[in-house]
Amino acid sequence: MNSAEVLVIGGGSIGLHAAYYLLKSGRKVTLLEFKQAARGSSSGNAGHIVPSHIVPLAAPGIIPTAIKWMLDPKNSPFGMKFSLDPAYLRWLLRFALSCTEANVQTAIPVLTSLGLLSAENFTRLIAEEKFDCHYRDSGLLFLYKTESAFADGRHEAELLHQRGLPAEVLDSAAVHTREPAALPEVIGGVHFTGDSSLHPARYLELLLKRVKQMGALVYENSPVTGFETRDGRISKVFTPAVSFEPQQVVLAAGAWSPGVVIGLGLDIPVQPGRGYSLTMKATQVMPKQALLLGERRVAVTPLGDQLRFTGRLELSNHDTTPNPKHIAGIQRAVREYIQLDDELDILETWAGLRPTTPDGLPIIGISPKYDNLILATGHAMLGLSLGPGTGQLVAEIANRVQPAFDVHPLRPDRF
Image (cartoon, rainbow, N blue to C red):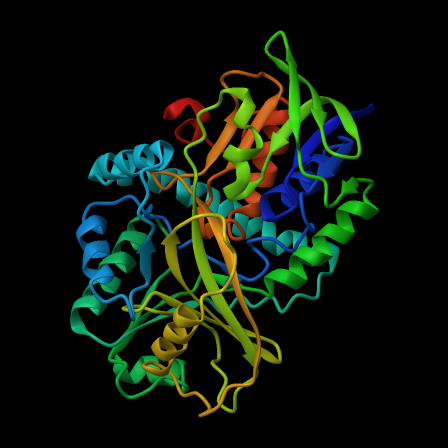
């Protein structure tokens, strides 16, 4: 039995950032990852850092929009499984009840604070640690082909202006000057100039290396197999090879979080949302910055001598096998907006799982049932983007320090 001052369960973006900020605060950290650290659901994503994303997934109008998308399965950016699993049905009901203006108004301030904190921490961390990860602070440019979608983009820009966040509306001429790779069919865009991008796998590999250098003990291929509790605390954590007696536990296992703690009697309403990416060698006409294709909800990211397309959200199971049909659909969507080579030299196709909550907000805080368990999960598509801010919050909560902002809306017992 090994002692552990702070035991972090999960070696993806949230777990690694939690470990980093805990180590910086002087705590000793042990990290468990059931597969390979730094290679999970954040490694193959778009690599976008998006403080502009302040509206939660659960918002008015999303249900009819999702139904409309699903009527075009060939090109839809959304899909969902059909299941009678009680936890899944309960999640769907909670999601439907959360699609209100009240939920949006609750979410916007806390997502704004967490997004800005994370963006600031990314800039500082990458500079201090001298990470070479293709970090670009040139913003995120949304491209639109229809007037209705462009109108929605202008509305979102106005919403950001109200919160003091930068967004620049571009007409057709301006958007083609800003992005020469855009096709003539693109009628306008919105440039969220406070956003940035990086190579997620490279960044997370560097972060893993750094936390090891800082003294973290990292156990890979070490799934948690059970817990022992005593007097409202987790007293032991078991894995196949070694067991631990932790003072503090941080659950940062993403979409697998509910399954990890299945025996602890916790309500963690997280469903896996599968996303896809394809990565290729640089094309002849490379985009000048990170893009998001408005109507198709597909992300485009230059990654040095590579280019990545990322898209689709499927409420599904825990399968991470890429579906060739959806990979092809993402490529078709990109060809509607920007210049591409006739044949792409594809290096990798990928699928990963986003941990999705019913109200679209992450779960961050002390468990209502175990006072030495901190939950940090449910970040959906923003696990990379919100990682540094979440890591700082976890360290502050673990050290009983006043958090950087009011985290009450993120509390685990809100469901």
